[in-house]
Length: 225
Picture 1 (cartoon, rainbow, N blue to C red):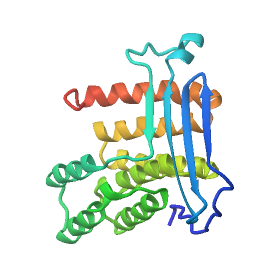
Picture 2 (cartoon, one colour):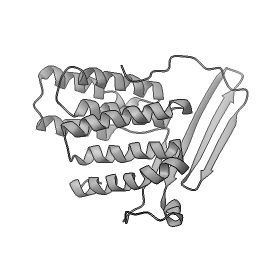
Picture 3 (cartoon, rainbow, N blue to C red):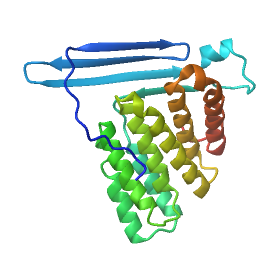
Picture 4 (cartoon, rainbow, N blue to C red):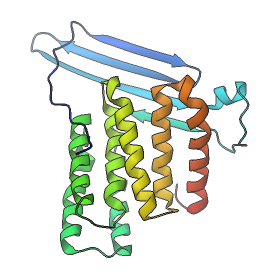
């Protein structure tokens, strides 16, 4: 499997802590709370990226009507993912076995809360994709799950791998179903991942790309919010 599932355990932090990240392209805040009396800890973070300030300083060749903007929180809903499958499956020829496998893989997405859970879900969709089906939804959801795993991961050393895997599988989905607005929305999200990895270096490449992907998604389906 090409997805990475972290199985090692981590010690509790020595004390409660908080993090604040500020750059020319966004803000980030994290909080880790420790309860020493019962050996528990819980943490979360919020990240927001907006390239408008950067673009005001560095002239860009594309003329954006809306500057690339990305926000991520540690609790994300996936109900729209199930709706997407419900409508898309009507438009593609699929065996009953494929439909049941997809329904099973999608059934618990709205309850996933950790990066590890999203990686396990990604493995489920990748197994479906490896069955030889020409459907675009399995690789799409592999990329989607990798993106969610990135957003919830505390391990920054995994960021580049997760972004690359998401990029690889969204390209497969795009090859199977070109000019799909949902795929371009996901491409826009993945470009945002690369920007978060290194805003100063990747912002120049992926900032304009994210803007073009968003504009393409709007053009393909103007009614899609």
